[in-house]
Image 1 (cartoon, rainbow, N blue to C red):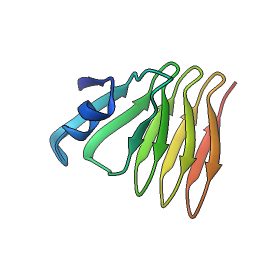
Image 2 (tube, rainbow, N blue to C red):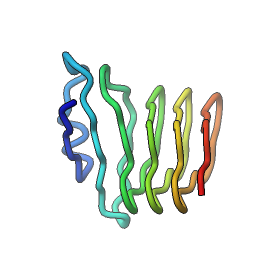
Image 3 (cartoon, rainbow, N blue to C red):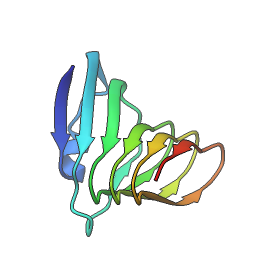
Length: 103
């Protein structure tokens, strides 16, 4: 599986709406500069990596949140599969979901 590293909003916004094959997208953003994920991208496996701060809107699906990553707000049908370490979700609205929280 190909992996793409995203470090800021501009890099996220530059991604295509779909990939031909499943592609891992790992977000490593500056914790002082949150990244807003407003669209789902077909054929990606999305991870929020160490200390990333993000906001999820719409149908964004995050596979894993790692080590102190944070989601300030989830809206729409956004989902997080697994949260590890001290990852946090601040607020969940509408039909947002977190599947598993692990210490």
